[in-house]
Image 1 (cartoon, one colour):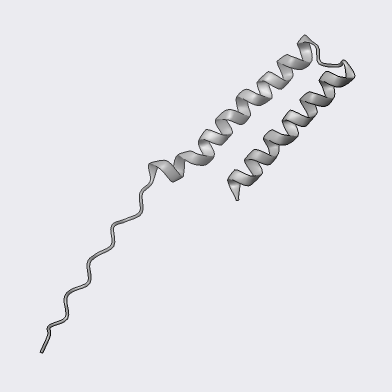
Image 2 (cartoon, rainbow, N blue to C red):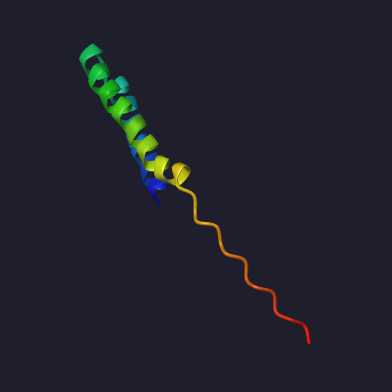
Length: 69
């Protein structure tokens, strides 16, 4: 679910950037603000994935074998 939200925010970011470019409002100040947002959003994605990659599930204990009688 987190990945879907993450990519949705990137899609909104791309759409806003395209709208600003088409309307002629994409200047140096706007690019700086969008750059700060993209930088922060990139690291937010890393933090969202880090717990999944760093933590491993505990190994399951094998079940004892049943004696065959």
